[in-house]
Each structure stands twice: as C-alpha cells, then as structure tokens.
Image (tube, rainbow, N blue to C red; front, side, top):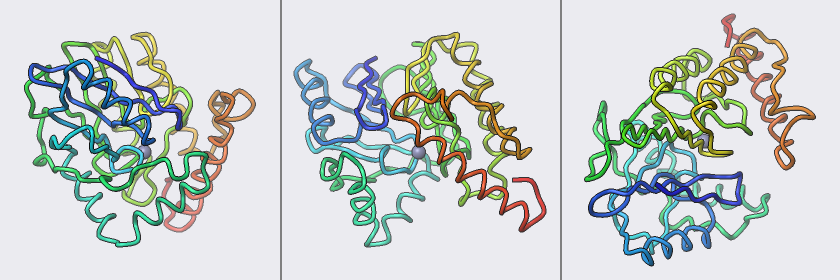
Length: 270
Ligand SMILES: [Zn+2]
C-alpha cells in the first residue's frame, strides 16, 4: 500500500499492490503529481492493472497517459453520472474555467478525465488479481459513491467521506433525501469500522483505528445538526479550521441555506 498526497486539497491517491500490478484509487490531481506517481511505479517495476474512481467528481476522475491503459472502474451509477456530465460538450471547459480560480490553473490534465468503465450494479469487489477490495456503495456526497475496504490490509479508502478537514458535503441535486442518504452511508461505513486499521479519506489526513469511529461520529453529529437547523459545533469550521481550510465554513453555510430553502419549499426536513 502506498498513499500519494496531492498539494490540491490534500487529496490522497492510494496504490494497492496485487500479484501482477497495482490497483490505483483516485490517482491525483496535478499533471506533475500524476507523472511523479507514474514514474515511482515504473521505477519500482509496477504496472497499473486497474484503476478506480470513488465518485464522479472531477478531482477523482483524472488520469495520466504514463499510467497506462488499464480499465478505470467506477460503480454503474458513478459511470452513468460521468457519462451524463461529459455528454455536455462544454463540461471540460467549465472545469478548466473553475480551475482558473484556483492556484492549480493549467496544471490539471483533463484529456483523460472520466474514461470510466462501469462495473455491473451490485458488484461486490473490484475484479482484479490482488487483495480483495470490497465495494461499499452508497448515495452520500455524489451518485454511485463507493468506499473500498481492503480487508486483509485493514484499509478503508473512504472517498469524500470521513475527512478531518472537510465537513460532510451532501449531494443536494441528485437525491430526494440527502440527509438520510448520508446517515445511511455512515451506518454502512460503521459496519466495517471495527476491522479498519487505516482510514484514507479522499482529502485530509490518514487516520488510524482510533480515528474511524471518531470521524463517523463527527460526521453524523454534523449531519444531524444540519437536519435540525442547528449550528454544528464542528472543529472543521470556524476559528478551529485548519489553516488553508477556512473556506469549509462557506461550504457549510451554503449547504445549510440550500437545505433550509428546500424544507421551506416542500415542508420536509432536508
Ligand atoms: Zn467529491
């Protein structure tokens, strides 16, 4: 197992060693980082035999030609969402325009973005010759989001959940009940928590066994506060936010406002 951390939003790429090569999960963001990872792998004689994108957001859908032409899997819902996004010919231009507002403008290779092979619905594991990587699919954060649990290594690759720096970001467009979907996803992750030694969030710090339940509880408390319309006392927002992550407070305010409007509109919480 190897974890490669990007400068962009502390993004974590995960490499799992198999018999004939490696499984690469959410490869990374910037061109030089992807190339660096590709070089590290080829220097150590490893080829990528499979890729996996945890969910259909651009920063989890990137690839570099030097990583080769292995199938890049995603859940069926993830792949469908990517296909839908990319059916709009302006999609990549919009991502590039969004990146112009960041410090990584021009550094992100979009050519190979989103070339995802759909795994059949209900697929339980990544089809590859290596440690079993169990697919834990749920509807929190993004359509077809999946965590991977590599049980024999005790590693949970959580995608955009269980971060120490980002609050839960709900999928407010794709689902009828984003709050309940998020809580259900946390329960799913909780069902394997006792067997996790290493927790790798898509963004943020890698956690040990003691962090798994703590982060699940922290995320649940945040989501419940959103549901009740309370101010969450969450260390990831406000003055205790990690330096560089002050913007997470704006993310929180934005989704709290949208949820409030939603419940006004249809009279339901969330
Ligand atoms: Zn995401």
